[in-house]
Amino acid sequence: MNTAGHPEATARRGLELTPFRGLRYDPDRVGSLAAVTSPPYDVVVRPDGLLHLESADPHNIVRLILPQAATPEARNEQAAETLRRWRSEGVLTVDSEPGLYVYEQRGGDGMLQRGIIGALRVSDPSEQVVLPHEDVMPHVVADRAALMRATYANLEPLLLTYRGDGAAAATTTVVERTAERPPLLSTTTEDGYCHRLWSVTDADDVARVRAELARHQALIADGHHRWATYRTLRAEHPSPSPWDHGLVLLVDTARYPLRVRAIHRLLHGFPVRDAVAALDGHFRVRRLDGPLTRAMEELAKAAESGNAFLLAGDGSFRLVDRPDPALLDRTVPAGRPRAWRTLDATVLHATLLADIWRIPDDSAAHVSYIHDTAATVAKAERDGGTAVLMHPVREEVVRELAQQGVTMPRKSTSFGPKPASGLVLRALDL
Image (cartoon, rainbow, N blue to C red; front, top):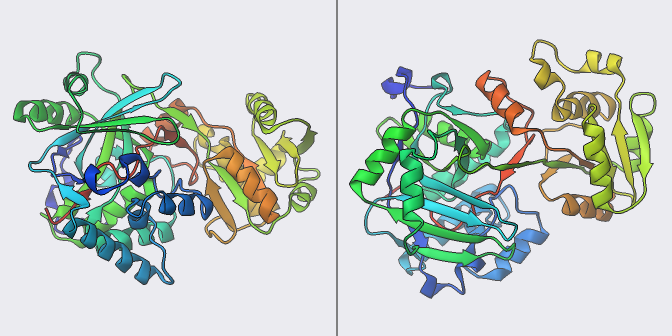
């Protein structure tokens, strides 16, 4: 990455989180706060989920993060104009003073996650302050960068994790003490999650948080493309500039462990019968009876012994496992750690997609990445494609590879719960 204009990039530094004046919905100007939120842009199932969100409220954040128009340029200009209009009309208002934001998510299953939102200094890879664990697709980075340039805003936080200093850590103390106060906002989204947000403006509390975080590095849990976008935009602008920082949510997983789920693949225009036929002699393929939940249980069992995948799209399920070792030796790139070479995502992309099925994985015309298991199956059955369902990788493996500087194939993991988009934005002109 070009670091011209950034002489500080060579210094060894930790996480540098800065307060900012949040841009937030005025609850009196929208139907409800829940109705204007959205999952992160890459989790929205399109077109069904997009249409559902657009119809939930005319001011839903999806109109900014996934604007709809005939061309990319028109989409971005539309988002920029929408943001300008919502600010001028008072739909979005600016908090009176800079702060960090404590963010809480609580689920009906007993899940509780708390973290802190702020503007994080965008570091260079050589500093090893923010560790990616997945590859990115350049066209997605270019698309996100164009949207951020047009709107001059960070529209949604990406999710970073770090391992804090224990229960008595300064950040934990500030976060949990703050969560005892009445929140700035509280809303329950239709998935049953309750979201609460507080502002931390006390100078001593902010200083304690910043001092602790400066001793830590973070792992990107969700938002690799947005982090790469932050780095692209930072390189374009001489420092100091607002692009030196990007909006993030930092969660201490020593206190609040995240859940790791898989991201599934939908192969367009590639029927299940063709996918299965091509596997003959290379993998074991077994047809499974029963519902999706039982098929996913069988996938989990098979994944304990090696690479395993579940194919769907023709009304049935097929468990694919026990790859030919000679095939893996020939198709999986050498020179990487064994933990990387044996990843399901590695075998899927290097062996199945590239070698056996001959499907390019870098184009949405051929492959879609979908977080929701049932939605992936439903779309495959409706469109006549093949759903490739994955089993999640363990967080320890993700962190181990990231610390070695080894990135996993794109869209290998889904950490969660993810922050809802639309609760707090960062406008770069403030």
